[in-house]
Image 1 (spheres, helix red, strand yellow):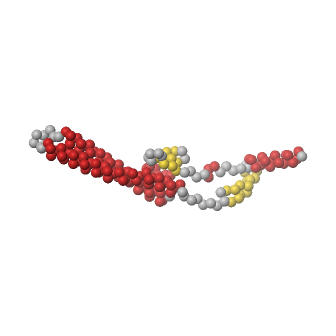
Image 2 (image 1 turned 90 degrees about the vertical axis):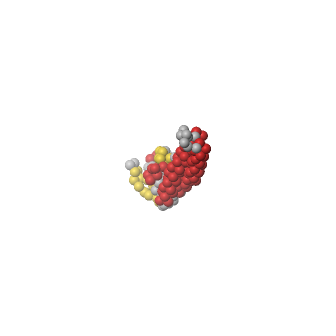
Image 3 (image 1 turned 180 degrees about the vertical axis):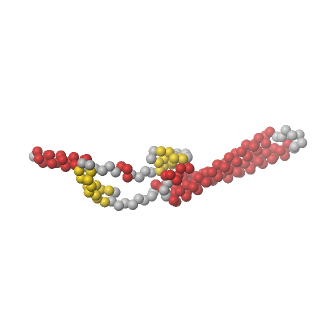
Length: 168
């Protein structure tokens, strides 16, 4: 009985200590922040300009490049429209200090500049609104990549015995 207990104990220790650590083979997922300004990969934040570091799929990279271009265009148009609206508003309510300029036409020109600025700002909305959906689409494409599934058994030696491992 003691021999059987000893053999079972040795076999149990062999199985416990001959296991191989495979935690490094796990794939990490990329996630997008709440506001869409950065990616989170391996508990580290990456800005949108660092997408080449963490994205491997070419389709996802092209969607990200398109999203970044749309964000830049939207920002430029939004800034320009806001500036024109502010400038036109000031012109429209203040009038001119020059007595040779007709005040009504000056104010009307200011409100026209305000209208053009509002139009430019509205033009920036489709560009800005499409950015987050494109970023989500790129993250979904990158995370959905299929990996090759080749499971196999392997006999190997470890530092303290032999092991039968199943790799998947």
